[in-house]
Structures are given as C-alpha cells and as structure tokens.
Image (cartoon, rainbow over all chains, first blue to last red; front, side):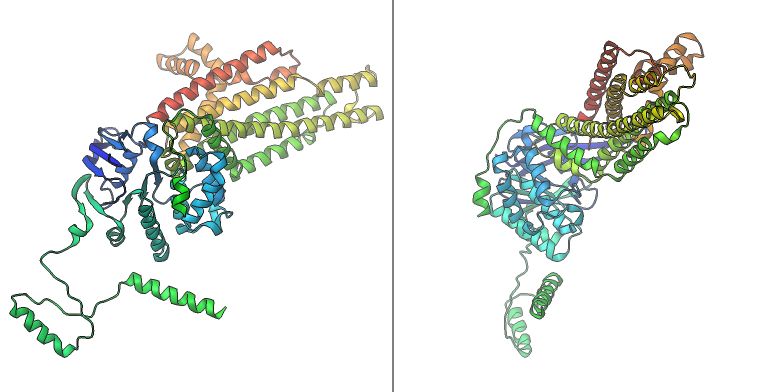
Length: 287
Length: 305
C-alpha cells in the first residue's frame, strides 16, 4: 500500500466571471512509498501547495483522485494518519507551546490520560521543552516551525506533509529542522516535503518530483538524478602542485579528458555554522 | 526513546462526529475572542455607559428609571451586536489569514465540527458579555432604588411624586415595582437570543466572503434590514414599483425579523409581556438560528480554503 497515491489529479481554479480559469494541476500521478522522504519541487505557482491541499481535502479536485494509505482523501478518516505543517504558520498567539499542543491533541482525539506525556514527547522531539510555557506571540520563526511540526505529530501519524518548513528560518534553525526530518525518517514516517531550498531537498529526500505549471516534468531518486555518470571525481590529499601536471599527463595518456584540479571549497552554509559555533564557544567561555 | 513512546500511542480507525472536538474548538474560540482588543474596548465602553446611565437624566423617578432601562437594554443590544458581528468576522478571517484553519481541517475533524465549534465559542462569548452587562445594569438599578427611596424618605429631590397626592409608602412601592420588573429578565433573554441569531447571520456571511470588512458591512446591513422587516412586509403588500415590491419581498421573506426581539418599548410603556409571547419569540430565534447555521454549513462544506 502506498502512503500517497494520486491518479490523474487535476485542479482548475475559476478566475471569476468571464475571466476563464487557470489549470493549477494537470493530471498528476504520484506514488509515494511508505517510509520514504519525497520532495516536491517547482517554482512558485507550479502546483505544489495545490497538491498538498487536494491531498488534505482543503480544496476539491476538478477530476482525478488521491488516496492516503488506501483511504480516499475526500473522507475524514483519511486524515487519521496525516500531520500537516502549512507554509508560514502563525497559530494562536495567546496560547503557550504546551497549550497549543493540548488543543491540537484534543482535536486528534489523544486520550486525556496520555495528553501530558504526548505533549512532553513532542516538545522533546522538537527541542521546545524550554519554551513550553511561553506564549507563541514571543516565538521566533524557527520556533513556530518547530511547534508546527510538533502539532503535526501529536496523533502519531504515519505521514507528515511539510510545506516549506524552512522558509524564513536562519541556517541554524534550518539545520535543526533538517535533522528533525531525518529523525522522522528513522521513526519510519513518510514525509512529503515541499521546498525551494534545493540543496536541502537534495540532502534529505530519497526521491523527488519537479512540477512546472501543474505538470510533473521529472521524477526519480535524487542520487540518480544528480549524478553525472560521464564524469569521475578524484580527491587526493598532500599532492604537491608540481606533481599535478604529471597526473594530468597520466590521465590523458589513458584517454581521459582532464577538466580541472582545484582545492575543494567548503560551502557557505557549513562555514557559517562553523563560525557561529566558534562564537558560541567563545561566548560561553567568557561568561 | 521518543520513538518508543510515540509508537505506543493508540491507532484509531473510524471518525464519528465528536462533541469533544466541537467543545475544544469552542473553548479555544472563546479564549481567543476574549483576548481581542476590539472585544475588550467595546465591552468596557458598554460597561462605562451602563454604569454612568444614572447621570443622564434629571426627571422624576419614573422617567429616570425608564431612562436607565432604556439605556441598559439598548447598550446590551447594540454593544452585543457590535461584538457579535465584528468578532465573528474577525475570528473567521484570521483563521484563514494565519492558516490555523489548515492545521485544524487537516486533522481528522469534520467541517461541521469546525463551524459548530466556532459558533458555540461565539455564543459563549455573547453569553459572558450579556451576563456582565446585565450584572452592571442590575447593580445600577438597585443602586438607584436605594438613592430614590432615601430621597423620597427625605422628602426632596427627583424621587418626589409630582402630583403631590401619593404617600411616601406608595412612591417607594412604585420605585420597587419598577426596579424589580421581571419583564427585564424576558427582555434580556430575548436580547441574548437576538445576539445568537446575529452571530449566526455573521457566520453565514463569513462563510461566503473572504474579507472581514465585507462580512461586517453585509451583516450590519442585514441587521438594519432585520429591524425594518415588518415594515417591509406591509409595504410589499401595499404599494410601489415592481422593483421596489421585489426588494420588499426579499427583505420580508429572507431576512429574519429582528425587531420582534425588542421588548424595550413594551417595558417602558408598562405593557404586560407574557411568558408565552417570550417563548414564542425565543422559539422563532432558535429556529431561525438553526436554519441560518444550516445554510452557513452547506456553503462552508464546499468552500475551498
């Protein structure tokens, strides 16, 4: 059984009187296996959010169908096994973190006897224990996203839908959310992730699909899609610059075309994280 | 460790309609509404007007008590209406704006539970508002009773009987009768019923619209038309062009008669208001509320969010 299965899922939005309609999603076929992390990519307006809304029955399909673990998405029962984090969520500003989770727990039917332990588990899972009694009005963007993931997980769903979970979050928060997604995978959850951050998607997703103007234009395993079979990367340590020419000649004698030999560069993200970590270390040392 | 604990959580299969979920949404709506600045400001203004209503007049005791009742019931009705329309419009619009509606409806929650929860939350808010305003109203009335009785016994001031024929005892009895008028309970009960109906109307409009301003404006228009409903019914039968007749027909048959909930004029004049009449109007209010909420739900059911 697939975690998500869509069959010719199509959505047309009416633009208003005599303005015609726009095709937001065009006969989308998706088969997402249980336990995999699946990325949905595409530029703005490509149909990513429309897909999520159709799966959650927040909007009705023009044609086609969608199923979650075999249950028709049009039924309330299909949402028993789904947790959802919308893009830029705000929640109820006057509630504390724990009260927010209690409210969503009540909606999901978490029994009163288990409520407190579930709240503790979710706050621990998302690293929000320290903020449990603070009102959401004082939360940072990253904290809102994390409490958002916690509320999505309150009823222990097998499938989690994340819509731009790292939008507007700083690199450290973004890294923490990425780690949380890895943790969900370890727990055996299926994750459907919509994101613009291609680097992050590449890092966490098993498979991806690229949408463009409502159509799926590419789908496959990330590693297969991004690897260039024609090229080989060799990385060596302690090779004197003088010897490079020798290596180049050797490779060319074997019929290979030598392209470049550079010192590898760190990514800006890892450099940033390293710098902040160092600064934190110095800060705590001076206190 | 977290995984072990999570995997022990129960797995449910069916999703029957749940009053517990309705109540969860209702209590959350109520708390959210009480934290809104607009609610607190309107309520404070109402309480202030009620508390200061005794200073608005300098007539004889009968006129003064009538004036306080007039202001009291008027403030409960009008202030309650402002709270009902603005808060209903604001809370539903902010659900979409803050995307909290996505997080709720993406859970195993029926749309009926959501709209009922929002409605019940607003009814709780109207109940709390009416109870608070009524408490201030009653306090002012009893305070005035003491003031007027002491003035009567002292033989001077506003409490004095203008004809000069009645004895002090008779005047005091009249003051007490005016203050402890049980018709006021019926008037407040119907004012509350009307506010519940106005909340349902605002909810119906909000289920169609996507803008808070539109909801407030249209609901307010319906509120005004609701008070002209009986006139519209007469005019529709009597006169006018075809267009005017059509307009009157629409108002007469598709807008609830809100004027029928107002007992203030009868109370001022001193008419007897029977429980039979009160319950009849109350039944009409409950019936109309149920009808309008059913319409609101049927629209919200298919609404694309």
